Length: 466
Ligand code: TYD
Ligand code: MG
Image 1 (cartoon, protein in one colour):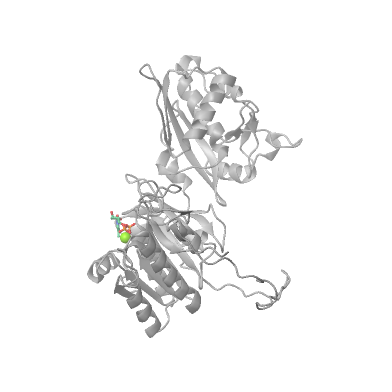
Image 2: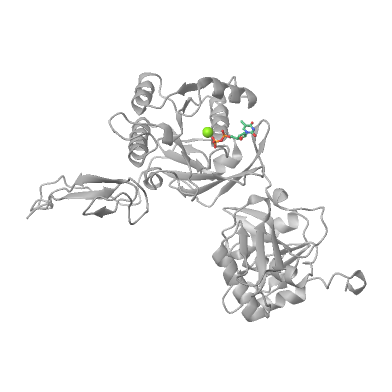
């Protein structure tokens, strides 16, 4: 018999349950459960010739070239895969005050100056406030269509009435509401409903939709995670409050690569591009100190050199502190355990602090060896040799494994004036030294305990080997 019992469905994660509850068991969201009538079970005979017949085609055939709008802001264009794709929807998520509105206003300003029709709709700021910001950014003359609105019905009516814009910015999705829903703006159902209508409009009209979304303290896009599934691309705009750098990172992109980053600096006149980010994350003036190692990393397609700092200090008895900024704490625990077990360090009673300089977040396992080098250096109070970079992935037995794109890393290293690398032995018979560009000497490391031999001798200058 067909089931038509009511079901209670979490509007945030989609989990269904038999009873209403204030909090969803599976995703922890509050007030997200609403009653939905379950659909009747599929009628008999579905698939017995009543539907429209599908025509299957081959993968190899004619396809439309996607039209892209490049903003001319290279750091942004690269992250979205070469430009914004017509008809697509993009979510730009980040903490309040990080610079989302500034970035998008600069992007539409640049696009509009190139003849792309742009509309900027703000539910957060009044027209006057946005004009003030535009004047500060030097964009007051850009032909951007500006409006302050929060009703999706008004927005869609406005968009369908006039000339179709190529780019529509909606800042932010949490302020938008549909008058067909009872709940307040910013609630799960409003965010989802409003986004759905706006995305449908973008698909139908061929405009690009740029949605701004705020992020909660836990780092999730406020409201439903489903927003991430609904859009074609999700960009995170991140950065540390106290730092000037801002990083746009693609975490999902149906029209381009992910893991690509764009680096900006927040200045008095808006965001300026940082084409060579390595210069931001390094500190060239300071001489060698213990507890620092330069990691040759890859962010997306671009090599980035960044300093990793560690401090190993005696802690109070009891459970030692492990504090990490910019890296994964689970990964740090693993590196510490491997150093204890395979390199004979005794860290059990020490506090360990790890920091990635400049507010960058690193996700690559290739940073393991640089983290280990910084820790060993702080532990033994011996600096890493000047002009040295470090990269490699560490396994549980203490072995150092090769990582992807060694050649690209070493090229960047050479460009920035480094002359030595501590790196794993590449796969196959090729010697590490053979892969090095001119001017770089490579010391192959195959076990973590070999790191100890590679540090400068202890501080007293008279004992220096070189
Ligand atoms: P904003 O774009 O309003 O952040 P969001 O939309 O993500 O909430 O950026 C706000 C911050 O940026 C604010 O603290 C001031 C700073 N800012 C500058 O430093 N320079 C500028 O030219 C602008 C426009 C903003
Ligand atoms: Mg804003």
